[in-house]
Image (cartoon, helix red, strand yellow):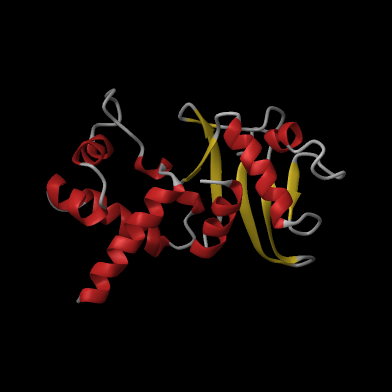
Length: 173
């Protein structure tokens, strides 16, 4: 996935935030401990709705893309193409963007995915979500075991695919 594709999907899905991860670890700013992320702010009193990328990585990988580059780039001062270039550089450095529960825009979407993973048998959940049986078992494993995988750290493509499958099932009914 390219930076342009990620940004477009993020906006089209109506997500609020995607955290930046490397080697399975959510990236935090060195000084503040804030989550480095792709974000959208809705209904800001001064600026209305705006979106962008926040974090130490923006300063590191955004150099020479925009003269006002610091720890944030957003659509108030930068184009989508400029933001996509930063995302591409972050990808090239081995980072990935993942959705986590705070990033889902509605409790309904979050709950729909959670139910699809955890209700019924593992094969049923695999069929509903399109996830492998192994992935379902990892999401359902005890948190204290090495087999455990946090389902809330899914990548954008997985969330898109699951929501599309679940919405198709609703349309059939």
